[in-house]
Length: 636
Image 1 (cartoon, one colour):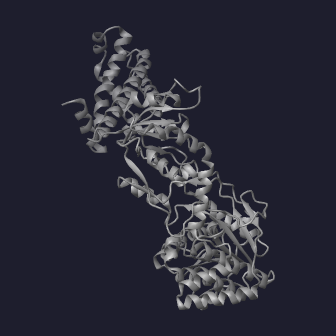
Image 2 (cartoon, helix red, strand yellow):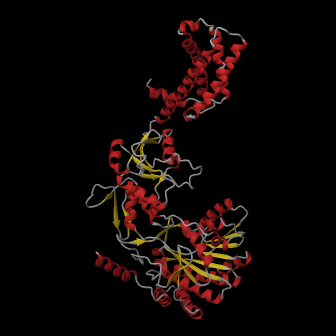
Image 3 (tube, helix red, strand yellow):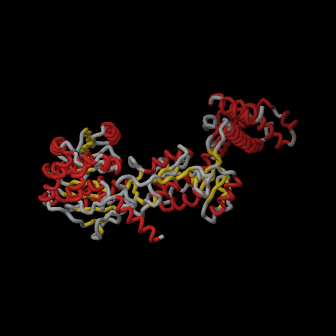
């Protein structure tokens, strides 16, 4: 039987059997350790054997119960670490003292007293060596279960990286082979038994150690630092994984179970600005809050953030039963004294909205309910306009009638110089809120918060690209030059809440979305991070092709956040205020009535004509994209 087979057999036996094997081994070898100690003292084995062997056996076996009391037999052998040295040393010292005392009390004069001290050293060496040999055998048996372990290079030789390397020693999935680290004082040194290389030698390291994947293990790095680290190794043509941040790691210790795929948020996310506690709690703490579209991507995150500020009650409104059930179930488990009310219905049901406001004494409203998918709304103009425009109108009227303190509309960058019905409908919704603010005269503070795409929302390109990569491609993008702003959902929700707390009435807040992202570059990064290559004309043997399928109806190449240039800081580093045109409330009422009649008749031409009257900056996507393409050609 080979050593690996022996190790595998040992790893498969029960814990009780392993303990009995340890006891049996100690019962055999500890007396031998005593004989060895006496032999070393007297000079020969023969002399030792002539010195009352029965007494030596009894005294040696006395060590076993001492080790048992110290917990050495309850320790899981494959997880034994250097602490066993301390436990063994102390336990054996106690055993030696007991042997010495017994030998003295029993007047066993034939046994040299100094041999007892020698016995401590010999027994200590045996106990420690036997346990570490057993640990090695058991680990080898567990790892040799027929699966090939992934050969891994760890980027980051700090505390987390070292913990991860030790954890991989127990793993049947991963095998850590080396470290990469930018710190010169660590390079060419050994950490956790593995050599540390400079990242400049990445290609050589991958070839020498036959690396299968790279794990970035620097959880304390900022988002910007993580992006740099990931982009530094993604060109190796290997899958790249990452350890989460210290906050995400429950116990702050790195283990194999913490390793996850690199998410696009790791590439695009920014270091969050901690919320201003005063702003964050102002419209929520101890109050009744209504969230419309509560089961959606933004709405559900708003609910979570609102709950963190301990309102007295949260009223959830959503027309999707499953979405409502999901967020209600989640919040009920985390409520801690906050009452959660789940209401199934649409913002188009004006009677329901009014009832919710008055029956629950709503004080703050976050209106996130909207149809937002550009091609869907473009092909379903009537329903898109009814939900986004007249649903907002119902919400604004009900809020004013019920004396709600604050009402915040969640808007979009597509409302700026819109080229599609969805964007135009959200701009009309903004006009509705501006008119409501003028009518309310400050009794209810109406405001709107405008931002771009959020990572991980329903319909986001990120999960689509991931599915396409898993299917072997191709990745489909609408246009090679299309650019979008992205933000993490939690950051967007926090900024929405803070912006609403700063509102005075009719405010248009614009979130700082950071730098725009070229969608084609995002797709290429996701391909590389999966350990694959892009298939191109120059690289026909690549794994995944990126195909441009053409812009969708109403889609434009570039999104904007401001209609005009009249923008001012708000006092928050990532929130700006925009001063934009509004329509007199009486005139807006007449224009909305004309739009309602067009919707009731389901007359597409009339609906488009009324939208253009309300939003004169609304233009066709083809016209805007032609101008953008001409600008790109000129710069090229």
